[in-house]
Length: 464
Image 1 (spheres, rainbow, N blue to C red):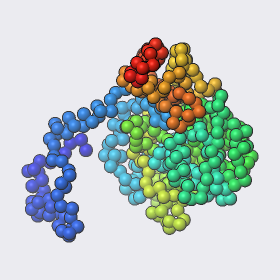
Image 2 (cartoon, rainbow, N blue to C red; image 1 turned 90 degrees about the horizontal axis):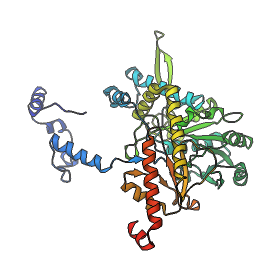
Image 3 (cartoon, rainbow, N blue to C red; image 1 turned 90 degrees about the vertical axis):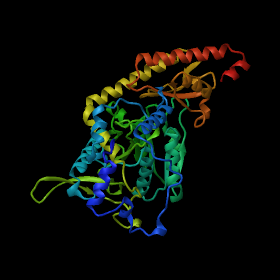
């Protein structure tokens, strides 16, 4: 609520109307022994002006940077109408729509979201969201094991987001599920069937296929999907939703299509927000729908024959015995899903395709310009979507700090997760980057590299 209009006089009048002397009287049923008393560590109240100043200072502490950093969270343009509608009280304060008769608006929106996501991914059915992309992938792994029954190993490529892999490991490691790491081709940055042949065992349940992968590289999804099915494995697609405006939908991969599709919905109208909250999406083939976690919204008719919407297939621990639940997902990211639904409705298929195409073009332009600098080279030769890996001839951490001082977030340092790539970074350019933005990045990077190349070693260390 942006403004609370109640004055002390208003509050006193309301208390008098209900026969209470003070606000504390409204809670007199709570035993004194259970009350917390004064909140000694909470600071004194502030005026509206003081609160505004405080929040401005905290917001400005994040800074305003020219952003070429992706790695799973992307700066896209969000039409103003999206969050103007999302923050209306009907959506902003709505909770899980357990009472269908009182929640038709929310349920209809979620039904539309499911329809859009099923169409975008080429799958039969979508659920009504999960926490984020990482937890969605973990749920897909659990779902694949339940569906496969005999296999408890998952082929997990190193080209999947490192954080996502760690989240999946944290969730499944105590459930006797093993993640088998699959290495990537050093020249192409992609997964090969030769590597899969070396990693696969008889008790594998699924293969995770990222598209694009963490390096931004496009995988041979048709060949990988067919390989998985030939081995009796499920194919779990892990996708960027924006890329699907240009790339083949997972439901069309190979001869039979992927079995489960997951990803993070942040690119669809959700601001970066210093790291969240975001939301995860999941879609699958009809034959696996009863193993899908979370909730699904169904369309039906009421006693008068009018169309209505309701929660269905709620295989969650609140609704049935915990031992029978498919998931411990307790709620969803409904507000973010609302934003995504509005975003997709506003930009439409053509608009999303333009966003994807411009992002792809900007990244190609950025990489071409960067690799024109002496000391910068492209790492992988395969096609990319809107991220790519470049290697520099100086410590990446030092360059990133120097560029940040110039107001540029220049990319993601890969040295910790992929030390074999040397001094490499992942760069991203979405549709929000202009030719001027790219020019500024290139000029600043070239200046810094040239200066450090000319400086003597002691001066270089001092300036790092």
